[in-house]
Length: 569
Image 1 (cartoon, one colour):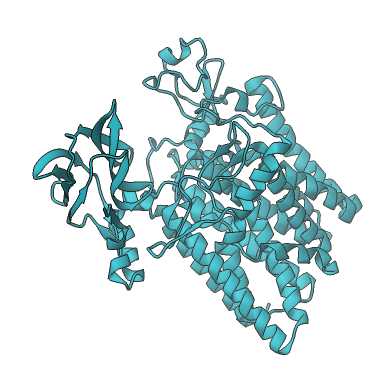
Image 2: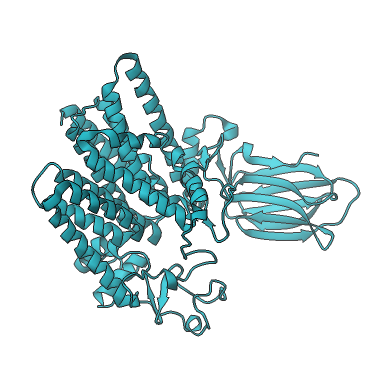
């Protein structure tokens, strides 16, 4: 590698690592060390392993066990339960794979006697996955004798680090994200070791690749698609040298099968049939009717573009699209907006010098996407299962394409590529700020507003934290329900609405799921409303014709002046 390329590679890893470190803690998930009470499902699983059993060391509530069907999603909400865990034979288990616990949480607990912060585990998985993906890119470019300019390599490494929904994944830390991050790390490592096995006859490389593809399945069972495709490619490309890969993969597969059998009496049962979850969640409903909406949400669903920081939002609720009953959907934006160059991934299939590796990369991404599309489950974090591999393949195809161009055509292609990557970076970083539940805005409002202030030159479009608010307007108390005032944006938005209950007008004051309802006297004349917010008391007061009708305590309001919308009659 040229010194300029090595310097760009090191700078890209440093920049990406610094961002990942900041992003995983930006919403309040700090790295808390030397504690044995951190909780977290994977810490619980690691404790269970050290105690010599496979269940979590938590006793289910006796009231839950006494129910006719403890798994009923409509069971009384006042009974404590471990949400999205598995309840089987009066014990709690995880349906999420044990891979992250085996790779990080158990070794850490055994060595230190303390819990591992889940936020740090997610950071390690994501940074390690990025490093292996970047090494795979460099290795495959060398295989194809392609040497892009250093600045183009930097753009490619930037795309690998930021254009694949990892910033979104880092914005919240829970068992889901840790499992997905672990799967991302393992597939990236498996691809790198597979690429190295094409260059070296040493048995270490295929054995390491088989081990990591197996561990990917131990993190995320749906990644068996990638493992199966890699197995076929290894057998066809390495022939007799495929034995170490097969042996390592079968070893992990046997461990996963044994783990399932010891817990549930079946090697194919991961626990989904015994999951404690909400209505319409948990159970997979694979069917052809899910494929079209699945592809729409995973690839094409347009995010919401605004003039106000962070400029790109997940549609809340998710955009309408014809879908079957029992289809589970969360706010989501299609992968083509996160990585606009994604279709170019298929160019890599036509480069003969690394065709085997690119075939595994592209087909793994395509197969995982197809599997997810059939399940009837669409959520933004699932895009990490397939999007990084499309991005990796895209970089390979684009590198070869640019190598073959020259003159004006080359400069035009380089410009278009750079613009596409920058667009993807902005979209991904914006989603990293909002995450699934706007945790930065809710948990770290000072940080959110500070970043917005740095990046928002127009005062009317600049979000503010708990600004004093005073709004006067008139509205008729007749003619049906109507919106009176909006402050901020969903899902954290204050709303004042005129509604009717039993034919009588009422004011509905609503903020972040908390609602205050107050009856208002009918009036033939327009009513003068006054709404004020006090930053000192965190109270929203609503008056009608000079008489105060209600007060509601509001935790925090973050709004730009342009996001204060009142009725005009």
